[in-house]
Amino acid sequence: MTKRSVFIVSDATGNTAERVVAAALKQFDASSVVAETFSHVRREQLIRDIIERAAGQEALVVHTMVDAAQRATIQQLCAEAGVKEVDLIGRLVAELAVLTSHEARMEPGGLHEVDDEYYRRIEAVEFAVRNDDGQHPRNLRKADIVLVGISRTSKTPLSTYLAQRGYKVANVPLVLGIELPAELKKIDSVRIFGLAIDPDALFRIRQARLQTLGMPADTAYGMRDHIDKEMEYARQVFDAHPDWPVIDVTDKAIEETAAELLALRKQRLR
Image 1 (tube, rainbow, N blue to C red):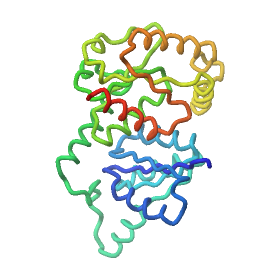
Image 2: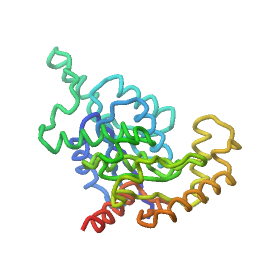
Image 3: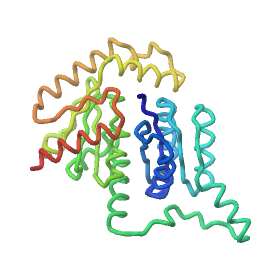
């Protein structure tokens, strides 16, 4: 049975939306649906990345964005990408504003009980955003998990997913002709994980990405010979670091990859 995806997008923790979606799924065969939560989504670029993924997976987007401008952005991007979306809060807030004759305070996460876990997750998400795609290598020593892989091996979405569970995650891209940051050699290898993908799958993903960006299909980024060179470079890096577990992300949902990674991490930390 083909699994279908529901993307839950929230400017806070997403807990409220998760409960609503879970309650609705009880009316169906929930085993055929995979729900993925994106919490603390407040940057337009992150919204764009999520909708792009949703389009690729033909996912349903369920969102609880308090900010009207962000709701409008999601609705517009979904309409442009042909993605179905459900706004769980916009209509309710509007009707309550009429009922009470007051404007909403527009405070994300107003239903969430503030506690240590909440702040830990916020800090982890902020860390993942700051340290995405090799930014600020000096922070690698602060990461709980470091992901290493070539472009389009799910580094960013996996970082975001793990961060939502409280892990500080940094990711480092493997780029032809560019050496790995020296800081990577200074941290405990138990925290480092490589990401690999089937070349045919990567070719399809990159071609789709180029089409989305309106770029020529023969751009080097999406050419098979260039991909093969990148794959060979990645193999050389991983062979040179046999203590890094390498996870194949081909055709896996983010939560599947995360579960495999966390299981490996647990074993390595024993």
